[in-house]
Image 1: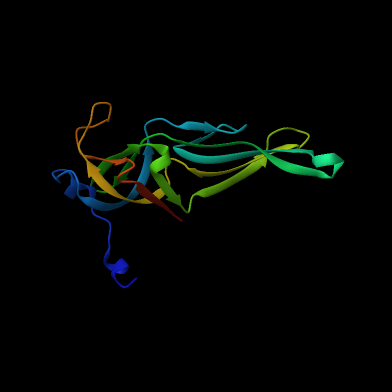
Image 2: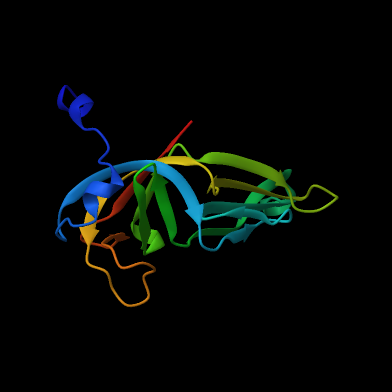
Amino acid sequence: MFLLRFLRPTPIAHLQGAPAGRKVIIEGRVVAQQTLPLGVAHLACVWYDNLVESMKAGLRGSRALWFVEKAECRFCGFWVEDASGRIWVGGDPREVNVRGAKRVTGAMNKAATERFTAHVIQPGAVVRVRGVLNAHERGDPGNEPVLRATAEHPVDIRVRA
């Protein structure tokens, strides 16, 4: 724990010429290239973890209970921007670990027999991202190294309040 206070974010300008394979921590604001709609309100976000439940009668006529209908996690790549530049964060949504995301809840229909609970990262949120720099690949925007979530090197995203 003592060493953690010395781990400070690296300015993005210092990463432009950095070799692939270097572990970095960056902090900045989320800038979306595209967004994902969430729920009935179509809330714009770049990452979400959504759980949809519905109220149904229990086994053998017991009282009504909430049953899980659908659970999904979606992620689209985004830019993390600080005062010195920006870097692309993308990859497999199963390899992205998120903590501190905003929680959103709501009803899905007027009868309130369906509800959703989601954790989201929206454009404009301040995040601290920890990962390994990867070489630019075809399909990645920009020409700089990127932080890509892979099975070998997951990306940790901490949403700052």
